[in-house]
Length: 363
Ligand code: SF4
Image 1 (cartoon, rainbow, N blue to C red):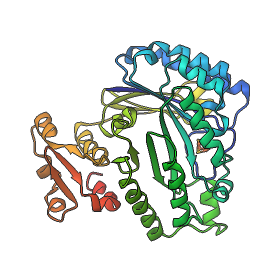
Image 2 (cartoon, rainbow, N blue to C red; image 1 turned 90 degrees about the horizontal axis):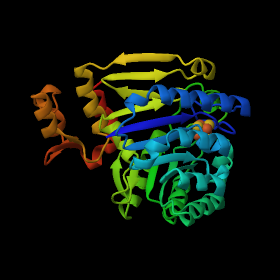
Image 3 (cartoon, rainbow, N blue to C red; image 1 turned 90 degrees about the vertical axis):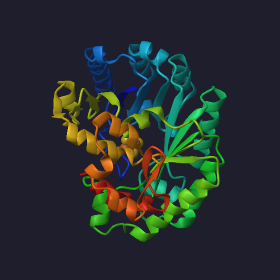
Image 4 (cartoon, rainbow, N blue to C red; image 1 turned 45 degrees about the horizontal axis):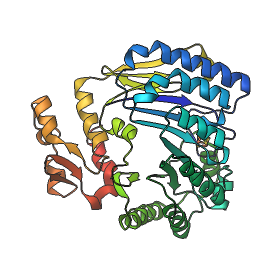
């Protein structure tokens, strides 16, 4: 398995909590960027064989005009034509029939919609602009055009959010014909407007216990549906787990292109600059060699995020050592945080909320 990630950093407006590499830009800069991106992908061509998934993320990839979008898709058309899963992230507000026509023309077979919440007050507070009806309408538009593999991104734990709000978001989402749901807890990142608002007591942060209750509610409600939790924040219908996301948790190789994008290839993590100016000069910000010991730790740090856990038999065969002894994991097994299930070691279902404590063991 090997992935290609392509970053489009443009958004029409900036959400108050966001710390992704993103910007509002004029048409000229968008064009310069897409040309540079195509050039970067060309320079990485010898690495781009046997790609199993392509993920075009952002930013808001569907905020660029159709001409630029087609130019980009055309440049990777050969890869898109054989790769198993080709995803594009979209803002529902901006999604049009002509964009969907391009998706079909270039074999984009999965769309991920950034929704975050359908609560009008919170939408306004975080500076987003969609409505519940708009989301519904766009999902049916995708389905009418044979794009059936649809993810929705949601966030819980926004300031002023209540348990009833989360229940309402879930009621709505579960009424829609989607295949995948990524449901993240809000992370308060420095250098965001929300961080400033909370630090200056303009808005109050939610209580940690309430956030934990929200997470439990989400898991419990989804347990009574056809959705299966396959990662801490990800749920899917059977056989609709994201091939691309699984690459990251399975420590597989991926090649990133675009502002701030990272690659993990030949035991190196290579990261591009997050500023447009530097990216256009095409300077790589960072190349880190990942040692064998770091790689072994990452197998557990990332793999334990999956509900299936880490295949310890495979680890043992590959590295000729027992990971339970190596990482001193017996204490976690004895206190029921970790359980062995066949060939796999995984976090016990009722300890998922405390996952971070276990991850620290591998830092
Ligand atoms: S649309 Fe997405 S990338 Fe753009 S500002 Fe909002 S959260 Fe960030």
